Length: 264
Ligand code: ADP
Image 1 (spheres, protein in one colour):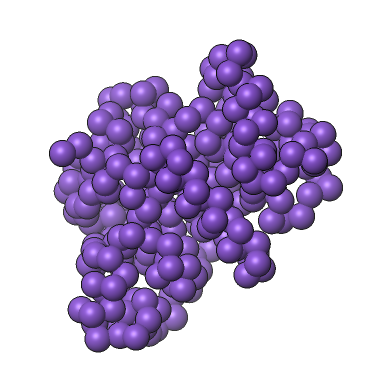
Image 2: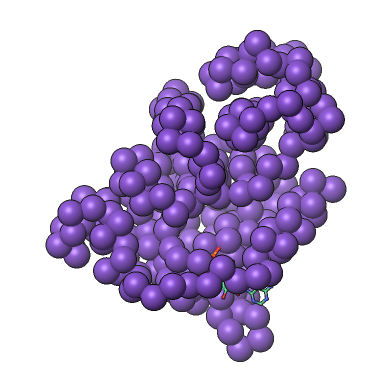
């Protein structure tokens, strides 16, 4: 069987320190997969390697059958991504942001307009399409980023904390859009979140990573049974411990730098 995402023996070292330390997992086509772990566990490093932004030290990866190290163009066409921080152009309208992305990805003119309209409709932004993005709320921006990330018909959609900082109503709506799109177009969803109740509700399968190692994989129900927990949050805490992980200072800066690199 061909997987949508396949990782085997993946390692990323910084000097002697292994940020990602020999991880293996696979995600089925069309699956909604949560990649969970405390701060500093190795989630972003893994996503950056999968999305061609970072070279692995060793190991093998495949996205939609392509190798992110040797087949970067094919891989980049195969996935869409929504980063933690907004990456829209505030001085453009919603439609223009979509159009810009479509041109960048070489989406043919004949199909572009229809696809933009369809996606703006799905995320309920049709009546705001000609407004500047700087007038948008956080939730509207996130919806637009989701629509934009799917414009080029990716097979795999990476979402790094897509609902971070949004109110529960908006979070629910966002997951409804994502689930519907995944079902309608057979898109594989690979997401991170710190909201364990979201992962419990939405994910078909979960991998828990900590200190660069995969601790366990399984459905939320399997993880709860395995740890004798009533909720995924309880299971997560049993699997990864209770001590506070300090948000390490450079992480946000590095994500921003990676995004700038990606856009230029
Ligand atoms: P997460 O996304 O799960 O919060 P990261 O993948 O950002 O974790 O980081 C994993 C570990 O690798 C952390 O300990 C982090 O400090 C370290 N790390 C990440 N990037 C670098 C880098 N460029 N140089 C050195 N260490 C790094």
